[in-house]
Structures are given as C-alpha cells and as structure tokens.
Length: 187
Image 1 (cartoon, rainbow, N blue to C red):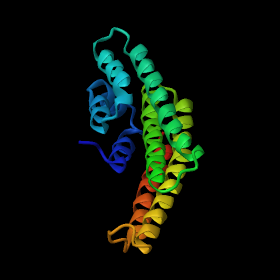
Image 2: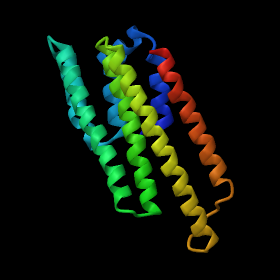
Image 3: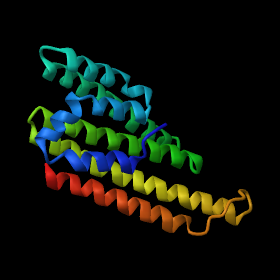
Image 4: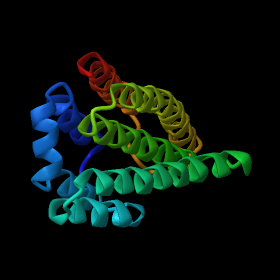
C-alpha cells in the first residue's frame, strides 16, 4: 500500500513547526514507516540509515546519510520527469512526468524535516522552496495529462467518463498546494 501525496504533506505539516514532534517522528521510526509505505525502491538506503540512527551512538551522522540518500532519490525523480519531457512525448508520459515531480516534491519535504531535526532551518527552508517549484511542475504535468485524457475521450479513443475530471484534478491540486504552502510558515 502506498501513501497518498496529500497524506504525506499533511503528516509533515502537523509536525514541521514542532521540534519535539520532528524528533519523535524520526527517532521513533515514523519517518521510516512513511518511506516504507510510500514504497519506492529509491528510498531503501534512506530507510536503512534511519534504522541505523535508532541504534547509533551518533544518530545525526546517520540522519545526514539519510539526507544524502533522499537527495539522490530526489534527483532520480527529477531526472525521470525531465527525461520524459526531453523525449517530447505526450499523453501517458505526462502522467509519468507528473509522478516524477510529485515524488521529488514529496522527497524535498522529507529532506526539509531531516534538516529541521538537525537544527538547520536555512536548509530546511531551501528544500521547502525546492518542493514548491517541483509541485508547480507536477501540477502543470498533471493538468496536461488531464487534457490528454479528455482529448482521447473526445475522439473516442478511450471509454471513460471524463465529466468533472478537470475540476476534480484542479480541486485536488488546490488542496495539495494549500498544505504545501502552509509548511514553510511553520519552519
């Protein structure tokens, strides 16, 4: 089972302004559980580092290792999204491009939490800024995908109900954007 994007953002929003909750979120293994539930193989090294932090005499060293692993995952997600864009493909690739940007956004938010754990508000804010930019790229690709699906439906290439698809996607993006923007207010 994977966690929905809005769920991950909401979890982060609830704790980002409270250092004690961030510490508990990471120290008690909640962040490890979230990464496992997101379920991407690119998080495996970060999961291992977070597990090691619970046993280490220097947990901050392991948190830094988790940050490095999350950075690598974030770059891989961005590369996936932009490579699809470079190929100039349309349609289903827009969904894959959107996924790459949403995963990079989600990862940047988790990196920000790790930096807050280490007491570095400047880097936490920098990664939240990155997350906002990645979110806007995700939103753009998501809306392009909606248009692609609607066009397929207009030409009879796909048999699904597209009534309200644009509106429901816009509503979802608005809710996600609202939660994401509220994160930086709490750091």
